[in-house]
Length: 232
Image (cartoon, rainbow, N blue to C red; front, top):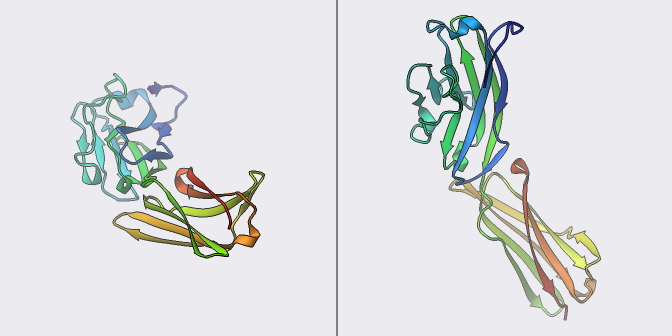
């Protein structure tokens, strides 16, 4: 929607819709930039143009001048549906980004700038394209009769994840395992992470549930895996 009001003192962006997080490989994601115009901004000679920028780059990744075809540029070249129309109004129909199959390298800050020869306004929001990775693996192995080694593995995650191990005694009390060692490394655009802990059997009650939790804070995503262990 585009608003026209005598109460507006100048061209103004009224809302910027950018999802906080989107799953890697989704069919599409839409970033929308709604703005209010003054009557004289509708003049074909007003110089009205909508631009989108990525991560403070001075060069736009998208540009649309009403009456002309929209352009996909830089990082978004070939990744947009340029036929998408968010409205039927000539001054706003191609203001939005329709990103096809977003992937993790598109995570970042997106700035919409709307300008004429006389006025301009902009707004920025961040979008995280997250990858939950492959299915988590939770292993238990006894190096000797008195101890058990619990190991949790997850691969192909983005952005940076966190991991923790817990023990649930008799399905009553869930306790974090404080001596957990967490290792992670970044490779080929994603993180691999492992959490492991060595626990004495005498500290466990039969049976005990071990649980591994994976967190991606920037995406507000979490997953968990559990297994039952019988000491002895």
